[in-house]
Length: 81
Image 1 (cartoon, one colour):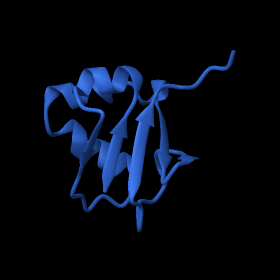
Image 2 (image 1 turned 30 degrees about the vertical axis):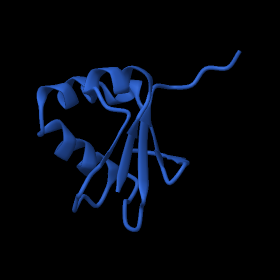
Image 3 (image 1 turned 135 degrees about the horizontal axis):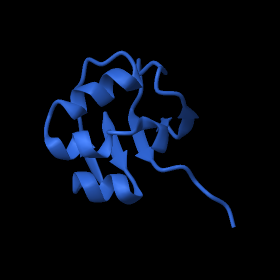
């Protein structure tokens, strides 16, 4: 699946997007896999309360299932103006 990173998440990881092979059943399981890769992922996912996630362009919670998902995006909360 494609994993997309936006704003400061992108800056910490150093990539805007990557293709990830995963057997994770949920978003939080994917986050744990990513955290285990390198310190930069640990830094990006250190405080999940500061992040939002979308699966196939639909906002979801971190316990959302990943079955059949093609894309997961991580980003800080959006503000309007």
